Image 1 (cartoon, rainbow, N blue to C red):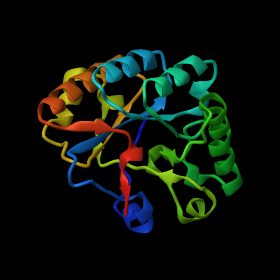
Image 2 (tube, rainbow, N blue to C red; image 1 turned 60 degrees about the vertical axis):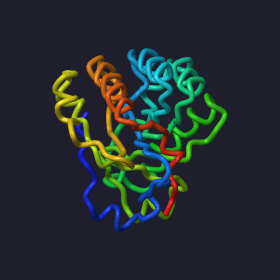
Image 3 (tube, rainbow, N blue to C red; image 1 turned 180 degrees about the vertical axis):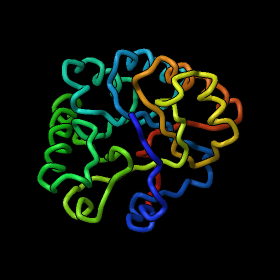
Length: 207
């Protein structure tokens, strides 16, 4: 699915979505959109083996019939966020329709994990002041896009990310391709050797 990096003015409009790092920790944030999928369990277990905590922004329609996958994500220590129900551009909907997309997925996450999600990754990075006023969640964007949905090739994804990742970066990947799983593991192995640690977005320190 097409995901574009949100324009700079989102950071100005929504300062609560801007984060600063603990200066004592060289951390990065690995995030996955669009799951769960047939690759979720492999991805979750591989990250756990590497002692990596990631954030998974789930699509409600992809959650149907995959409760055990979601429960395993939580068991493996990953953070669950909302990515809408149908992967729609929320700021193109009425407020009622947008809230319906968010709440339907929130209900599934709350029922299956026992906790209401705090974070939302709006599809396409599309957010607005109107949504900000009515959605009691923290929007999480990204600043490093792996383009894994487009490339669907491990080596090309790694080449795309080469030299891009720095301390405090939020990396966007997708839970839906074997190539993304393979690239994520290779990226983690490489960056861990460089002294980086991977944590979920809950570890961010709000401005």
